[in-house]
Image (cartoon, rainbow, N blue to C red):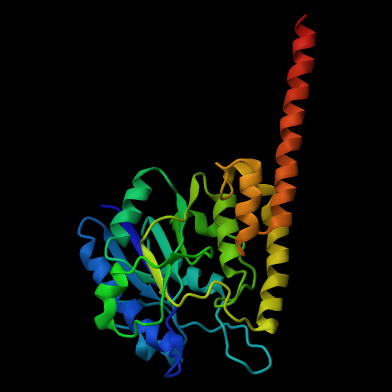
Length: 295
């Protein structure tokens, strides 16, 4: 039986906040999806600070409490994605790992569909969410949440990857809850996996709220951006256009799709496009020379 370990990072959210409303729904949706996935071995884990442990439901196995954090000017402390995934790696021997943001609601068929995708030979993939209106605020709304097709969303917040890939990841000091965490994970998957894909047309996860680009804290954003620039330099030699999202599209369509996606960086991809063209020209030139030599 395929074994999957899924980790989230629960937070004791302030009453009245969006996360305060969403988290109980997320917890129950994950429980139901695990129950639904009869033919898949699913284990649920949480990675949390000590002060947040009390809100973690019993159907999640708590990993060792988080200690490190990015905390700027006395504002909220944010955990590092490397610490969350490291705890999953230490706590589970499952073949595949899943990380989702704490506000991502999975549909009942989520784990079974993930297993079917894995059967197709993918060692990593990303599933884009749907977004639905803020008219749902209770676990009792789950049937309607499941049924609301909502609208697509370009960002990345659900990552599935083979356990053996994690030690290769370059994650720096990227903190969660801030832009660039999704770009960091996405680029690591496409750099290190043999067969990776972005699934942007499946109805498997959803999020309450229609915003595409929510407000951001500029100080934390600046921190993650600087960290990602370091990570990008290390990952870029491992990346190619053939492995990146939207590779199947024509050049104009690729540029268009990437320009619209905030987690895919246009300049970086133009550099990869140039690298790809250079490799093709080099191949054709060598082929031409070798043919002349044969004459």
